[in-house]
Length: 383
Image (cartoon, rainbow, N blue to C red; front, side, top):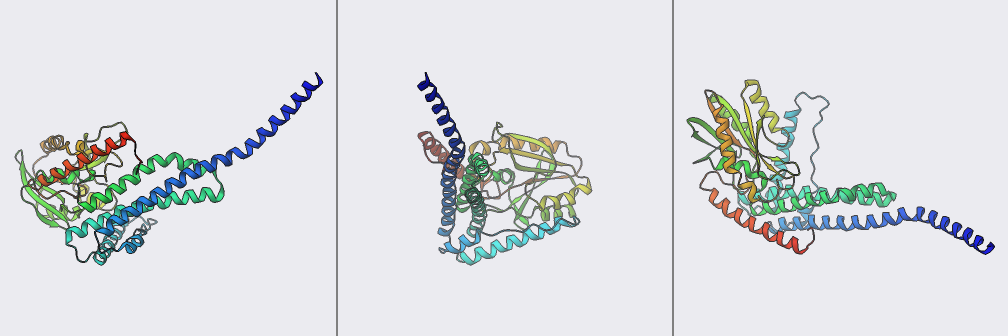
């Protein structure tokens, strides 16, 4: 009995020792495992960023080092301490940013034509986004390692699936811009082009055509294509308003869908549908004081689908958007209507005829998506 008692006490003591050892070492072991996983992901993101830069370099005179340096480019937001005039400050800052991009592209691709330079320009913008993602992930990985902070490592690990998705979409966006493929955000310009017969440039990188829909005269606007552009829609609207009585403004844009919603679904609302900052505020300052009704039509796209090559279900939304436009025009009172296809014009021309080429590109994109889906089923890396 005494021996059993002694063995029981020894076992209990040993159990307590192992318990406290595990309490001390298990978090460190867990941290090591999480850090190793994050280190692998950080390396993959950096490789993806480098691959995007290589892609752009191949379209230039091999200026890889210059491109690597330029992807560190940043924009300092203007001070909003005094909010009066902040929109004009932002607009000026954006114009300065665009001038810097144009200047850099002229340096590394002075032998290319205008359209090719635009492709390189927007490829750089996507590559910068990818570079920032890889840098931020690397920052938190190194911070977790430096301070041996399990909480930071776990937070980054939990967010990693979403980060990978965004990084992958930025990479696909870089490729789309470099090759001149329509992206999810190009659905607005595509709708506008489908209504245009013969357009002409009326403002910086903006084309217009005057058509008649159900007896109502309409000005159709979009960014100039098929090279990537966003255009100065605000300048085009100002020019039209000076000479015409406008009864209604209709905007068509890609809109972020919620998880569970179907890509390509069309929704109607009010307001000026345009992403980003600066230009939308300038446009609202022009239109709202005149009490012109603003209708918005959005085509639902996923967070990563907006910058990736356009999926078939997004392109297939055109008939539903046309029906929504006619419904909006029906509500217009006496006067003309402005229809604006908001978004990036990459891969989308400036009239109905040019859309035949866009449709051919969309067929190739759809075939590529199906191929990737098959590879994914077989099991492949997320990159």
